[in-house]
Image (tube, rainbow, N blue to C red; front, top):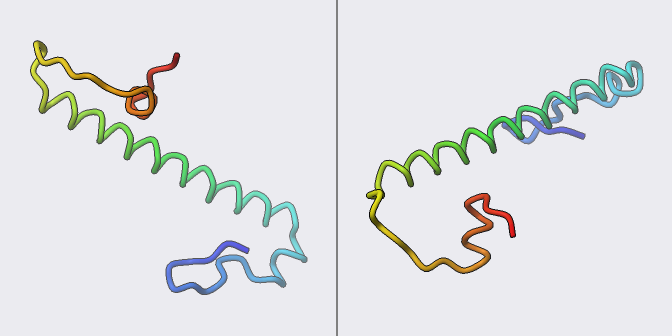
Length: 73
């Protein structure tokens, strides 16, 4: 069950059982919106990082820190 801002059900049980295809589609839309939000948040974090670092600055980072910035081993 997906919940709205007030904690009230976003999809009513009646709707979900009467229209299972629409219920799955609505849940998929919520998941897509969550993913878009996560990507936009990550983009903002990276833009801020770029804006506040000089090209000549260097840092010692752990593997976990590198992974958090999107580097892969």
